[in-house]
Length: 250
Image (cartoon, rainbow, N blue to C red; front, top):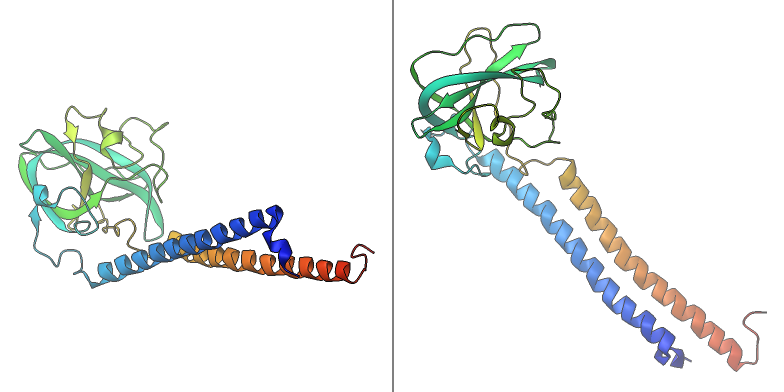
């Protein structure tokens, strides 16, 4: 009754099923692994000491920014130079701008320093003059398309859309660190900007998308197996009818 399984047509179907099911299971397992990695990163981030609890370290020791160093207190010395506003930044439900000042360090590079958040309509205070030492939470450069990040084009002079070396390289006469710090103690008129969690450490929408994709891939594997059994059953019934002299199409 099941001799049809050895026909060329069914060989093709069988090979497809034998390849599709392991592929779906593999992809589902991979997506599940990505979700578990995000959960582990989130739990690890929660176990880490709060920002400022760890001893501050020189900037050079914490670069490049990783999940482990993001949020760590970094220290750097130099002289403040160019200052920009980063508009359309929300804090406590209000819209304003970050006050971003470039700290020119002795090694010839400039470190973006967010000295605080400024309400709309206010004038940013001038940075201190002379040699200064700053300590703030280290952050990775922002990227276009990220949450709360505006594209760099079409902004007035003195404003930048995102905090990154790519956005600042043509605005300052120095190489710019691919990182920035946010000060915990903001000057008068500004509000401190809290450090953001490192990318990939939170249970965000992408994490639950991975979990959803896991279920989809396992469902695909079950669907392929279900359809194979259904086709086999239909073909077996048709073969049985033909053996009894019945017309399966009648």
